[in-house]
Length: 197
Length: 121
Image (cartoon, rainbow over all chains, first blue to last red; front, side, top):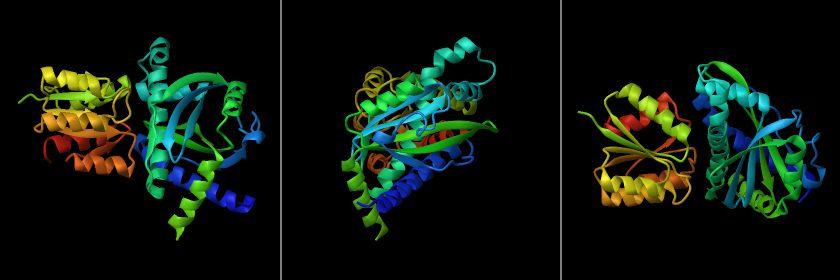
């Protein structure tokens, strides 16, 4: 597989994900702005290439089986988490109340974003993707890099970004990271080629 | 006449939001909650709801499996699958069960779709 061919498939995959997440985000009102998706080889992953500019992130993690046998992460900066929670749950909830429900609320938001994107992939490629329930944790940017590097079944990652508008307010959303292995890349290449014919 | 609705979702937040939208539209309806398919089946054995919303991805059995068991035992219950997992495979499964799949997020519009289905609109 040449580098150019691979880039083309990653771009197609990113477009499918954006279409799916766009549909879900419309439920929160509308998608706003889209930063350029990008992909990285595992050995090229660090805080800079991942563009992790904040120190700490709320991370939603979900595992998939089927064609995509791996993990998807959604990263929200700590600052974004507070903004999103305030908008989702209302100004009357105090800081303690927001803290109490943070894991629950962000896990569900991440679940919606991940499943929208992955459902679009499944439908486009006519496959079934089964998933675990989401898990939400807080990690530093260094820990996120380490976690990805420690995944033995990962060769590359695809990064897209989903912004939100909740109750009329534009909010920075989350960085959606798909951890990919060569097996998936080869299969997705074949299926994308087939779907294009 | 007052109706009873069972909201099945492992997300407490989703249960709260669905319940709020249902209450806003039908203040007299009685709301029950379950956090898994297994819990829903156990609840229904004791108290039959008129309507049910069912998430798919939950700890334990899939919501579609729970929905199948519930509808086989109690075909009069009007049930919708309410999930972020909107893959065509699950939409087809919902159709085969004689129901619909409503896509999350939980909003007035998405809950409205479920309510329309319940009330046969």
